[in-house]
Every structure is written in C-alpha cells, then in structure tokens.
Amino acid sequence: MDEANHISLDVYQKAKKGNYYCGDSYFYKETEEAFVCAIADGLGSGEMARESSQAVMNIVEDYPHLTIESLVNKCNEALVGKRGVVLGILRIDFPSQSYSYSSIGNIGVIMVSPEGKKSRNIPLAGYLAGFPRKLRVTRGTVEKGMKFLMFSDGVNDRRFPLKSVHTDDVTSIIEQYKELYGQVRDDDTTLIVMEYL
Image (cartoon, rainbow, N blue to C red; front, side):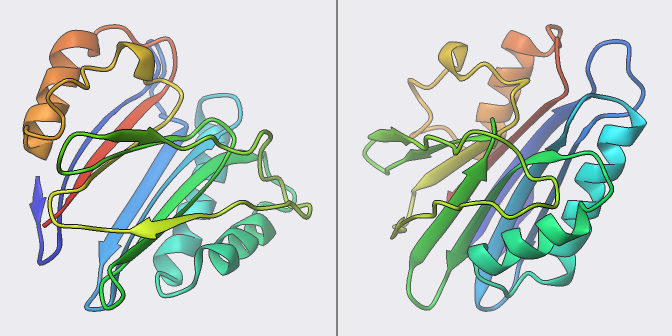
C-alpha cells in the first residue's frame, strides 16, 4: 500500500492463467496539485497487448499535469501502428477538490461515498487505436473518505464484495478480492483501490 498526502492506494494485478505477460498496464502519480491514475488493457493478450498498454502508460507518466481530454488524445497518437487498448483515466485535482474520469472500453470505475453510496461509470464502447474518438468525461467533487475502484475486465464487479467498501481500508479490500477470486483468472486482471484522505 502507498501512503501519500491525499491518496491511499493498493493494487492487485495478475496475468491471465497460462500467460507470462499481463496485457494490462497501470500507472499512478500524486503531485502537489493532482493525482492521476490510469489502466490500459491491450487488445488480445500476451506481449503485443503489453506493448500497446505500456505505450499508453508512458504517455500518462510523461504528462500527468494534462487534462483528461488532452491525455487521451496523446495516448491515442501513441497507438498509431500498434494494437489498440481500452483505457480508463482518473484525475483528482486537489486545489478544486474535484475529480474527472474517462473510460473507453471495458475499464470500470466505481465511486463510493464516505456514507457507502455507490455509483458506477458507464464506459464508452470501443477502444483507442490511433484514430479520432469521441470522449465522455465524468466530473464531480471529492470528499474525505471517498473511494474509487478502477479495474480491467478480468474483475467481475457483479461478484465484487462491495458491502463494506466504504468502511474497509484499501488494503483490506484488495485482500478480500484476492482471497475470493485470486485463483480464477480467465483474463488479465488489474484492480486499483484508492481513497481520498
């Protein structure tokens, strides 16, 4: 688990059963001004999928200060001539205490209020592959104790143990997930649990 000034975070990632390379890549960074977190899942599986998802993470790493819209455009440019990816990016702006999130393809996000109210993001269908894309950005206000769960399609959120997410810490949530579903891996799996402190 990583402790920082504003965000507590833990990650679970495993490759699809039988694969050495995980086609999912993720990146997160907290600066003085903001926190950015992204998951990309390369189409297909194995090394070529990993190459595409990693190319996108390199962009997020190089430009963490950009808006969601600008980041997605730059990620899209990096995919020309490569396999496509599905992508989710979350950005939390500390001075304005706001978040913005966008998802293309099956990267899910669940937001949980400190009181336990859950809302799910509906991702845009399709994937990024170097050609122009419409984008939908969800925006809102963050409050202390709010949690964000971001995950690739290896996570079946319908089976997800959500009852105590608003009271459990990020590591407990990851441990519960590992215990329940760590052995069942029909796809590359990435789950990132974040709490705004």
